[in-house]
Image 1 (cartoon, helix red, strand yellow):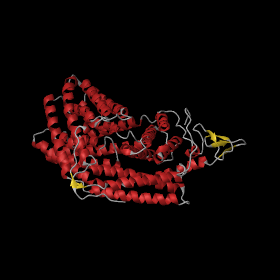
Image 2 (cartoon, helix red, strand yellow):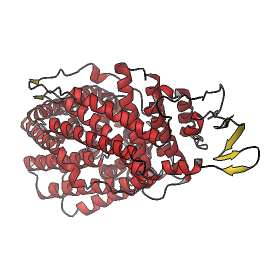
Image 3 (spheres, rainbow, N blue to C red):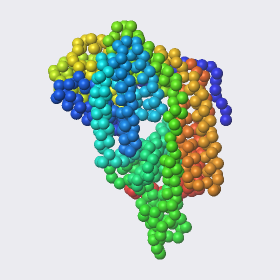
Image 4 (cartoon, rainbow, N blue to C red):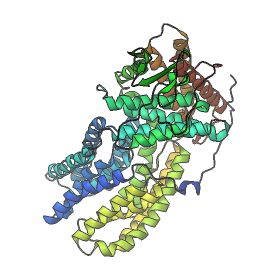
Length: 602
């Protein structure tokens, strides 16, 4: 295998127009949008009734936790939401205590920058998001510049905790109606991605991109299904079988039926029964999807129903149910494996954490030097920029600036309405919350158009302020935060990116060799084979994510792109071999007599 690792450093072009291009909305855009409204409205309206709307920023801190974990199964969501609420309360406590002990703006900015770095690193390591660390940083940074006394801190924390409990209830509310909704959506996305790859399986750059997306979607589906480590339900088992069929399509895309995969995806998204997939090995033996076909021995007709075979003499159970159960043995084994310790996942994030701390601190200091009254706006702007690499960070900076500039214009138009009274102010805040979450999935800048007036309206909860001053201050702090934050990102280069690609390549090679050995060993157990296959699939997805992240870094040696591509191709062939070893696909060179019948049901 040749290596393509040039030694020259290079500077990459930074996109502008592409960063503002709108994408497709999220499949569940309405869930966080409605959840945040349901979480913010009752506490805010209650405080308004009591004449204490000045306390609403503290309840809103807890209410905003309802934005998290919408892609997690409900059992896992309960834990994630609880940790998010505790993390929010921890950051808020540090901020409020700091604000009660000192009014030195430089000290407060420093505390805010360190909090932002910790929140960024922990959220990235635990993959909590979206919206990841940005909401937590906004809450803690804003609280730093609200005058406090030590005696007020417990009461304000209690308000945030009570609203956090309500947000937890809002986040868990759909569970009785759709207990497997997140798993169904993840499975449907995997099936659709596998169908898209099957449609472009003839090669070319488009096919390679579809393949990476399909493997990532299947990997994400497994992460969702394995997020709950208790004994899986019948529904989750059925979803796991569908994800296995998506893996089969990835292993042999030319033989897959995209229409059938998409029909399964549509059925899974609803609330009805999970479609039965049948046994792919029997389909290769000549059975039609409706269960009628020729017996493998060619003697006569047979019919299958739920793993039973009816011949001319008797109804008997064949080995299909046992083989189907074996396919899921490795899944159960993987579910029993404990996740990696948090500390081991924080190491690679050190450069991003340093960027966050330095960029947020410098942005706050520059804002203070310019006479800003709310330097946390610049701090939060810088904190929101930092992504996996410089190119993505630049794109986020462009999106943030454009969205905020348009957003201040929207605030100028909304402010006269919000100032009509407390109820009008609360309703405007709720509308901005809904709009931000409904639009941010299309592009970050579009969501920022609503986030900006939301942040400005929150500052008016203790009392109305001149609109012109708020608009001017927000524009200046946005430009300062974006500029200083990006300069800090360029200054703190991620020299480890290239080394992480090398380590990811080594991991893929070892996982591929291990999977190949297990697949070639006739005595391998189903659990060992499935564990090797899952390990290789996870390594391939991690390699692609690592290579993509490193490709956007500046001032580093060119990446071994040829080795990455060759490693991916070899890994995909080995994955196909492991699928074939399990009997899910025929051996190469065999001829399948299976033909799809028009109108046949899966």
